[in-house]
Length: 117
Image (cartoon, rainbow, N blue to C red):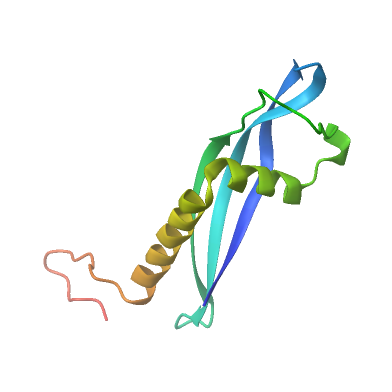
């Protein structure tokens, strides 16, 4: 099983927009996956991906002042803006990266060196 953690704490905001101050319009997110499978050192396999997500601020109905914004709120805004299909796609990407760590399909070799174990 993989636990997914969305880090959405960094945002870009307009100083003023739509009659409000400090309006968040872009989120810098990182998705981190942590597997319950442990590696040979006893640590969980992990992988991450990151990106940005623009938020639609053209019709703000329930503006939340910056001092009341939480990372949970921003994560919700981000996922809503992405849509369920894109969220699922990002989580599948991270899962795939972890799966490749657990069961690699490629290795790196050096000429004249023994094959690593």
